[in-house]
Length: 191
Image 1 (cartoon, rainbow, N blue to C red):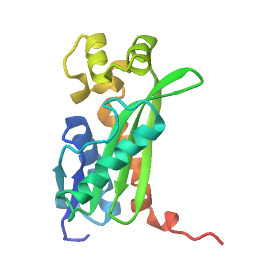
Image 2 (spheres, one colour):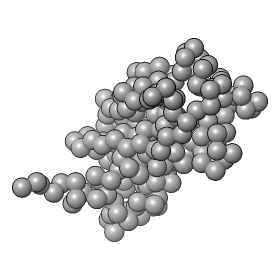
Image 3 (spheres, one colour):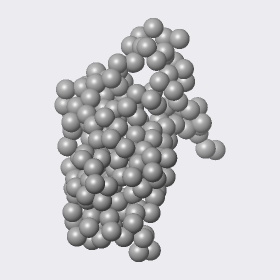
């Protein structure tokens, strides 16, 4: 194991996102040649450059990438990994889905990853996707709770906490980090 500190910069201070990053890096520490106690996390609120509730796959991916890249051009130039996470909606065949996306870069290599997707009930889809309301405000109203997005998230409400917002970001981040912890396969040249 390496004795050097691994610095991870996160483009959000929202608890589900920060905790997802910590859970994933703790799990992957041996594959990244470090120990869980040798990882330092810094979190900053970075602008996604997209709507508060993204409504297309392109905006979801752009939002995650923009948060990570803003860290590099901001105050976190010394981090080993820059992480952007974005959640929102997209539609296909008339069905609206909720999905979480992650973007990871070490300043040279870049990678995307996504969670699974869950169909959104019409009451939420109509308000958020079709009328442009904020998912955060709508899910608080539907769940009759406050600040759902900083806790279990819409994922938790839709799945009765079987899958939370944090867990959806963990899946997305594990996927995005694959080229870093499984670099041999991703760097393999085609002949």
